[in-house]
Amino acid sequence: MRRIAMMLLVSLSACQDQAQPVSSTASPTLEIAAARLPEQVATFTRGDTVFHERERPGLGVAVDYAGPARAAVATVSLYDRGRRPDDAALTEEFNQAVGEVMAAAGARTRQVMTERERREVAVPNGAPMNCARLAGTYGRQEVTTLVCVGPAAGRFIKVQVTMPSRQVRPVDPIPFIVAVTEAARAG
Image (cartoon, rainbow, N blue to C red):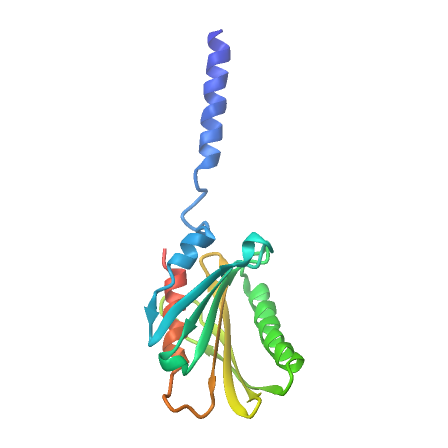
């Protein structure tokens, strides 16, 4: 009887050990990751949060932001598509993100987008974000879209900012991109 009780205790102990996080590098839940994104950052204000993960596993969460007087709009997405953000996956995700924006523009009536440049945006204490600047029109309005992808706490972070090319109230998207990336990476 004692032997059975000991075996049960060992089994329970093993189960309890498995329930503990493996390491401090484990990804936080999507709810925690989304909660890390600030309400106000670099003149942008947080809007709606949509958990795509619930209906489409791997697609994570998207958080909308608006610049002052809606002079710019942004979406911050945290997702994994079922894989880790290593170098090869990051390159693939970046190219896919740019392609998705271009394809969406091509599918809309009277919208045209072209890629203007690619560059890295430095983020303190972490990997840079790979960014592409796209320019085009939405109807008669000339617009600029900045699409950036990088790693964040075991997931991908994609930041997309769109604004009129000729702004009445100029908005610099780079401080916003850096700040939300730092917040998403905070642990």
